[in-house]
Length: 136
Length: 161
Image 1: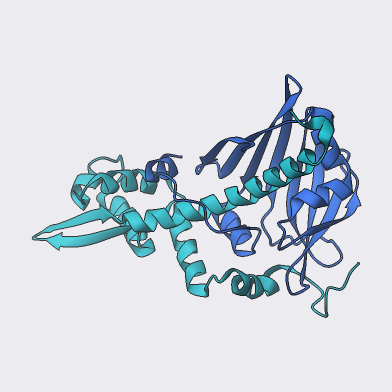
Image 2 (image 1 turned 180 degrees about the vertical axis):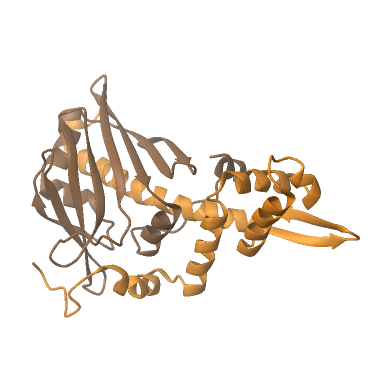
């Protein structure tokens, strides 16, 4: 069935080819993993909503959830590692703020999938538009 | 523009797109039921699709490959779950090797296509779901993507899901 070259299979072996085609670097891919992992948890998404609205101390955040301070601190650390949240120290307090640009990066990745579907829909529209009997 | 609505559910990892086509359901149905028409719309111009097997019935399989600019070929398959002409069909879509054997380690999406009659036009709803965010990201990395990234959505929409 066609020529698949001598590689015999598709899949992960070709990821680097795709990345080359798309101009996406390995670093971007690692970053995407961290971003999606960070946002895969409901509590972390809730923390993001709060820190995007304004700076919060970690202890103020911890008071909002029915879980230990350590558990909330751990969620904050995951968000910080992904780059979605930045922390600074003020006296004895740790203050956390959301990084708007990092959140936008996730949004644009989700929008890529939408583009695939929009492309298919546009091609259906083109296909039926070439048939005079369906014209309005 | 035929696309009338798009919604992302970041909790369920689901993308729902609604489009309205100026043709009756029977015509839109043909596009999926006829492999020669399906391949015209499935792949982007830079990665055109060729449909190989096309058993469009419950339990049936559709196999295809997409050819890249360097002549590189990338195969995929559909496992058809249900077919209810002309109201809709459901299937899983995944990556395959050169023999069209599904690659188990690669992400699979679950898809529900439904078609509603609206005075001779067709309202099509496409619902595509991935099991994990990592799977979704992997699909994007694999280049099942066309065009450049869309304009950035609202931050609140994203994180509220």
